[in-house]
Image 1 (cartoon, rainbow, N blue to C red):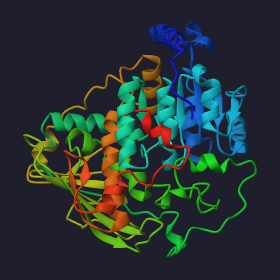
Image 2: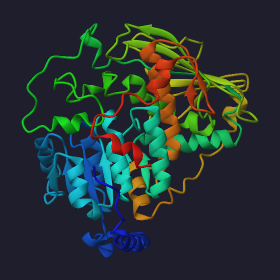
Image 3: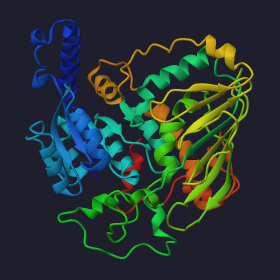
Length: 460
């Protein structure tokens, strides 16, 4: 285990900030007069996870004018090589690693920021080690794999003073500013119920009734399977885990809810100041299983009153191809989307950057004729741009910092426990414990970390 070290690159990062500010000041000049940001003035970037979603967020970061890619890390090095080729000269000199621990040991004092696009269960150790070394982190959603891991990541962000972003991209977009403005101006108030859904097929649905972990298969050449398993139980390699199939397994992923909840419920959670629910109800479990997430679930979350115009309310989540929310006249919820029901109005919206529409309620005509302008953002409304500018000192904060995205993700973790056990849960929001089910309370922490991986849980 690499211990936290003093941030030896602080002075260089201060130079980067000054150079970035100067570059920003030149933005009013023609491009030919501006010139490019000098290599020495850029953020040194490491891309951790070079395939699938990791490649998507990594490529966006590599192409950004504020970065130069100095390192790539993937448990299958050929995937990093493939990523390097697709970048067409933008990271030709990047050093390739198959173990993030070796990456940080050898180059940690040279790296300013990293993207983390790996399976859910591996987010935590990579992010914790990076933060402990003063490295800014962009972590794909969901933030972590367990309730406790979210708690520790929130604490580490505060302790180490680094810029952190969870990858729910819509939280930097216009839909965040719209929702914020509609709450601040009283358009959205007295919400009693939200119905949200994800009604598309998932990779594990065709597998049927899983009775055991899959049999061993030949893994990709050169794969570092030990690092892939990270803190989680190390099973025999199977294509039903990698690449991309890990999300359906309790040991490694957070199912459809952990995948799509961050894109659907983020602004509701933030601007209605929901915090954590006191009750989680497993109302429907379709094809429950001891190993993988059910094919369809309906789970409900009951939240306490939070203040004026914020009464008790319930969020109902529906996943599964045919498990649709109840229909109401004029309320057409997309296959991935939500309906918000307040005392006076009904709203419908999608996911990510999809905006809200008023579709019903006794004050629909009045409200629709007097909608306020969206709030003005003091940060970039592009998610990766916001992260990198915050890392360079140009934006004051990350729009989906761990202080914001951590409690949001903890709601999903509670929901995943209810989906797994099929039980109603009582949650004490003060002690942060599940009080009516010992097994569920154990799952707030999840399985014990594998031997040799315990130290990451002590860095906060």
